[in-house]
Image (cartoon, rainbow, N blue to C red; front, side):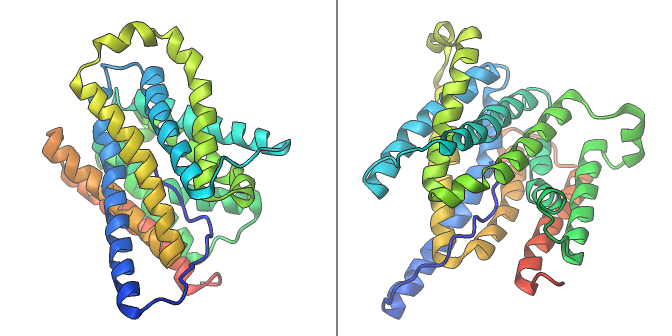
Length: 320
């Protein structure tokens, strides 16, 4: 899953310069590995497609993730912070959008389209977050953000239509592409509607509670799709894929990403999101033998450039 910086400040107490330099190097390495882990979620998800029902895959992924997230939160904060009144509603909204809906669309979409195409469509997440932030919260769309929006959407259209953008007006989107765009809008909803939750709790606690809520929501649909009867039928590939998605793609990925935000700030950390579709493209080629056409490369270039330009608008200020 892709996310945007949550505005956590850089907290770097007085330390010897050599220690600071080592810490920064490790931070950049962790962020690069995080992008690699998130790129790998598309390969793991594709490995489950057709073998594990989307509801079962999503439930098992976040059961594993929730277990480790709870341990991590207790280790970091001593306990799970208590929820009061409105907090419960915010957790339910976050769980239903960022976990339940996102992962249902994610696993469903990967049964119908290639992992590399799915990754490149989902890479437009930050662009749509910026667009809807402007529409809903009246945040200003700077010229750089507008350029980034146009480039990324153009890239996504090239990927979807194979370079013939006019085709989309004749045939529309396929079911697989619609499902992956469902991921995009689920994550946009999660990012925008979850803002009060991240203002109330730390990013790690917010992710933990969202994961717990989403897992509970996924339980009964998963059971209705034969969860318990299917468990003995899963082989090594399915369990490795689920463990990867739960531990590396969710827990370790988010934890290192938020560590990066704390160490070097949200803007510099956010730039590493650009490596996610690139890593997915490379991994899908070598592991899944998915073709990399000139249209996919061109679309990928536009999507990544658009997201990068959108991040540059933070560097250059709000009036650029």
